[in-house]
Image (tube, rainbow, N blue to C red):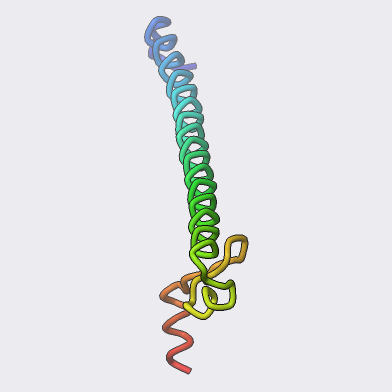
Length: 98
């Protein structure tokens, strides 16, 4: 048995600090999760707005007398088609080294 006596209040304070640190860490993770969800929601809304604007601009170009074939010849993609993805630096440098 130890010769030193433990102060009950000190032990209780240390226990409370350990529990509070764990709870605070869990709460912080939920805060970060909520921020990430809000960011994703905002990006999804922005993407929908951009798609709507793209469709409107395409329709306006057709109404102005452009044909779909002519518009595609300019390099502009039609609404609903997947655009080209930018390559990462790693894949771009790997391709150029070949």
